[in-house]
Length: 381
Image (cartoon, rainbow, N blue to C red):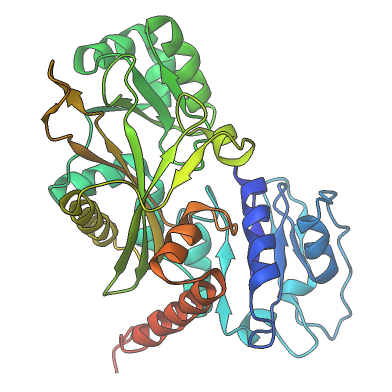
């Protein structure tokens, strides 16, 4: 199990990994914890468990005996990143692993980079591959794939950090020409609502853009659903599978804050999950079908949580809804939060798959996908 990482979601990863480690059937699996510090140092064994416990001090680089076959990685700072994770007396540890569970959220873990390493090592791993992970992380590319699949989305504007820094006034004009306040400003490549701001008017736009730009070079500005003073319903579906994915029941989050931001997700009890969401059968069916379509559009595998926004109902003077509320696909998360109280496991629990069994299913799907890959010929005979 791999956790931690250099992204802004490091702490979320530790929470997810600790929950899995406490719940996994240790009579069935021999779990090898591998941690990555915020500085990019790889840890194993006791040091990895210390990282889970909150010890964030970098581990000293250990010298290996000459008989040990080690691999040395050097980060951007030039410091050696070497540990027993990559060196054992009888060869590389990675070759002895059956399945890697990368409980990594955000940059360098959920974006296809670590998945590329697993592919090079030819080891089975939980979750989407390089392409699915990359498209699921990059909201700009994700939205293009959703559009190609004919899935409904809110109007949005894509901008680069360099464009914003070069001519902020021009960018503001472009945003205001296409979108009406309120809008949401997001870094394209991040999750857990890190770096996201709800902007009510022009005075709030520049700080929100600067915040998002501190996390990524690509920025997404989205039209708010429902208009000023109206909150959309925030709906979520968990998807599980490879080539034949299944969708869970639909859940709803009633945020304790103005929207479901990072603090509302991880540091507040005010947000209320409703599982299953109160929807008509046709609405629930539509959302679940859209979730699977989004999963396939991004070439995902293993698991994903798909998020939707539903317009607040329009009520006429007689107190009745005057039209059906429109449903918009918001985004897909290829490695969602995985604590026992996170929405992804809770949605599957409500669908009949308890937490421990869900872990089993994900490990089996990883092995299945790796075995299927063996049918592919990579060289000419």
